[in-house]
Image (cartoon, rainbow, N blue to C red; front, side, top):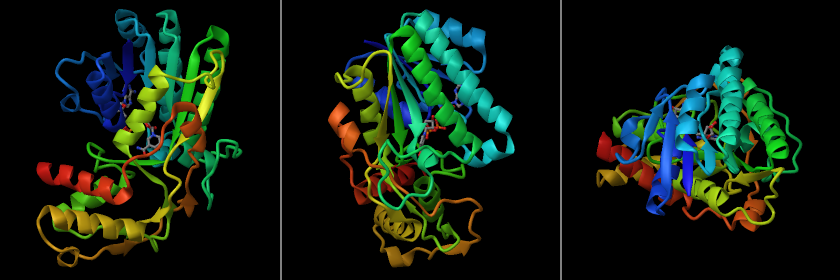
Length: 321
Ligand SMILES: NC(=O)c1ccc[n+]([C@@H]2O[C@H](COP(=O)([O-])OP(=O)(O)OC[C@H]3O[C@@H](n4cnc5c(N)ncnc54)[C@H](O)[C@@H]3O)[C@@H](O)[C@H]2O)c1
């Protein structure tokens, strides 16, 4: 099967590419390298350095590749940037998505997988939210993910393609960008490896559902290759991808400190204790997703527990420190 991964040079996209290549599929990537890197990709994978907002360039790249399936990971993914620059957010996440969808159906593509977000759709929830939870996005980023699913539904109905929207919880793992505002595991790992304290926003009792990047990549591959009869052509199937387990930032920092210390054969107590900064306006207190449906439809469930995933991530950053 020929699969085109947009955003394939990024964190989650590059894990998807790795898995597809390992399974013997032909893979090509579209990425503007705004946050991704060529180094994340196997040398054999063709990369089209294209901004998905550029309609003609996307059409050319997709027509050249003629993929059977498209996995759309490219996005503007900063919530705070979306608040500051809602127009830019909509250009990348709506116009960019429409460009990719349009080019895909014109090139004869029959399957489309879209990276959506449970975190921004469901808002504050204290128990794992199922897909039936009414969407209530409050940031422009959340709104464009929600609108993205509606466009996906339209293209699926209009062109009879099989479309899956995967609503990730908080994804972490090797290759995540440690310089952004999100990606707390990457940010704290990098800080602690530099011998500095991690800074916890507010009291740190903000609960999130952390899921390991390569587990998320596997969900994408299952959705691309083998959607069961539940994924009807002509409709969009939305599936949560997460663990349903809540961890707050104070607990997470302790886990990361332990993992980073282990990379140097030290004890967690030998690393600097965290500092507490001001709370971030609008931060949700609790957000977690119920991925039971992804288990039924894709046969997917998370395999890497948080402590193990954090250790693998700290190890990866330590080797590059
Ligand atoms: N990381 C998370 O916790 C999380 C949670 C929910 C949803 N998501 C979604 O998963 C997807 C992948 O996120 P990630 O964490 O791997 O982020 P990432 O920044 O590592 O990956 C995004 C990739 O898209 C590329 N890109 C960005 N804008 C582009 C444009 N205009 N044209 C072409 N390429 C462009 C970037 O260069 C990068 O390689 C995104 O759609 C994001 O919204 C991520």
